[in-house]
Length: 232
Image 1 (cartoon, rainbow, N blue to C red):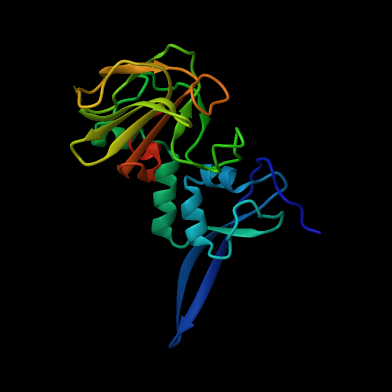
Image 2 (cartoon, rainbow, N blue to C red):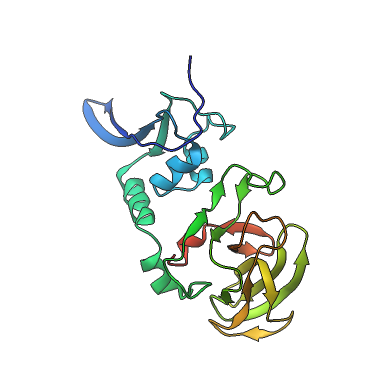
């Protein structure tokens, strides 16, 4: 009987597929991950520099990320170029940040990350399993900064996000700062990069003092992995 996985372990299996056409053999490298006891989809994604959605796109048979089993083979790339992209993503966003111009929201690279972007177990029973940002676990009162210049489009209280700020940037992207203990800005304010906009807290649906930081391509939708832009 297959065993449902709930925690993280490692294991990678490489498989090569050969196709013969008109007497010519073409080799296409396929990288598969063999699920081990203790794995879950989030741990596999993080380990291989992917998001949950990317894994599910590569594996059309996965319709419920909760249901993966020991012995399953999960595709993590389909060709050499994809493997190179995965490797560069896994190395972190430091190089990306140098080209995108996004600062760290706490001005504190290396601050502990308590929850990554993507699928996760719901920590409060009310937050949902899709995590649209990255959580930084630091002390209440720690200053929070705008990662890039822009206009504050929302600043207030939300039952889930708690005290929050949303900034729209000139490139059309939005950044989100949730669970603040206090807000140090207002809707309509023009802010520069590293403007102090609030302080870390634990308001709204929260299990402890932290900053939830997010990036999206549209207001409250189109969320992306912040690691693609910010060096954490």
